[in-house]
Image (cartoon, rainbow, N blue to C red; front, side, top):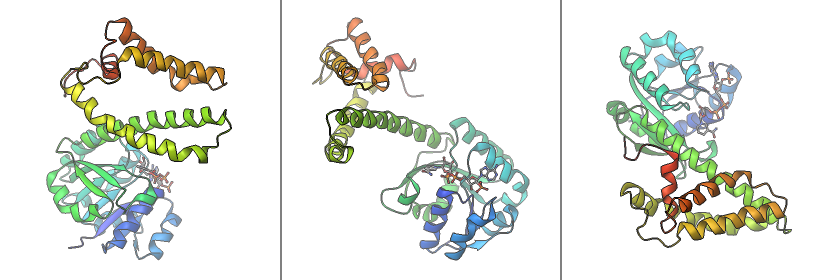
Length: 292
Ligand code: NDP
C-alpha cells in the first residue's frame, strides 16, 4: 500500500516532496549531493543513503528532483543496472525534447519512466493547491499513483514523455505574462499614491475573473473563428490599449512589458480584422494552426 520511495535531490522542492511522502506514510530514503541538506528530512523520519546507488536500490519508486536535465544524467548514469525494473519519476524541470531523451535512455535500460512537471511552489506541495502534470509510461503511473497523490493532484497527459514538460512550459509562459502585467499595474497605481497592499485585493479579484477568458478563447482558436461571440472588438481594444501605454509614459512608468501586444493588436486592425476578437493575434505567434 505504501511502496518505498527514494528521493534524489533535496533542494527546496525535493525536501518538500520527501516531507509530503513521509507524511503520507511511505518509507522514504533520501540522497543529496551536499549531504547536510538531508538532515531535516532525516530528522523527520527519512533514511539517509550513503550514495546515489544506495538510494536507488532502496526505492521501488525513484523520484529525481535535481536542477536540470544534465544533472539527472550526472546522478543516474552510473546506476542504470540498479534502476532496471524500477519506476523512475523525474520531476526535474526539463524541456520536452530532454524528457523524450530521458524516456528513450530509460527504455534502453529497462527502467519504467514517467516525467513530471510540478505546478506548485514548495510550500504548496501536499496541499490541495498543488497539481503535477505527468506523461510517459502508463504502468509507471499506475505503480506510483498513490505515492504521487501525496504530492498534489495527479494529472496524467498520456504516453508522449515530452507532453508534461510542454504543458508545464505553456503554463509557466502564461504565468510570466500575467506576472509582468501585475508588476506593471502595481507600478502604475503607485504613481497615484496607492500602495501595492491596498491595490492587491481588487487586482486579485480582477485576475480571477480574467482567467475565465481561457475557455471562450480556446473555442475561437480551435474553430478558427475569431469573429464569433465578439463582445470586445479589436478596433476598440487597440485604441484602449494605446491609452494604457500613453498613460504609463505620462506617469513615468516604462510600458516595455505592454507595448509588443499593442503592436499586434494594431496589426490586426490594419489587416482588416478590426471587427474580430483579439484572439486572432495567435496567428502572428505561430505558423501551426492545428493541434500537432
Ligand atoms: P534547488 O536549487 O533548491 O535544488 C537543486 C538541487 O539539485 C539540489 O539538491 C542540488 O544539489 C541538485 N543538483 C544540482 N546540480 C547537480 C548535479 N550536477 N549533481 C547532483 N545534484 C545536483 O532547486 P529546487 O529544489 O527549487 O528545484 C528543483 C527542481 O524542481 C528544478 O528542476 C525546478 O525547476 C523544479 N521546480 C521547482 C519549483 C520551485 O518553486 N522551487 C517549482 C516547480 C518545479 P546540492 O544541494 O548539492 O547543490
